[in-house]
Length: 87
Ligand SMILES: [Zn+2]
Image: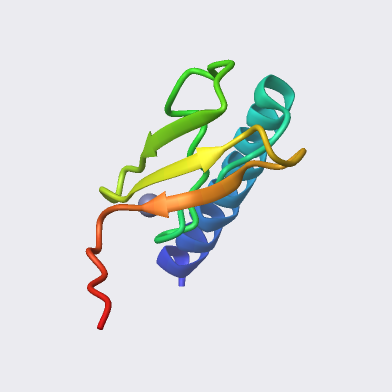
């Protein structure tokens, strides 16, 4: 019983921390990039460069490339972890 309650509290705390983290990223970068694999916020792991193309490497190993130039929100250009073979 106590263990379950503790687990719930930890979960809630994690959610709150995540929300704070996203707010912090929004404040700093103006937008949030989410990992296409695990949907973790990416751009607090790298500096917010003033570049058109930015590469992020997620904690899960996924490498994704984003274009900040085309739209007000960054667009996912490519992800590299899984090699897709066409044909
Ligand atoms: Zn990830």
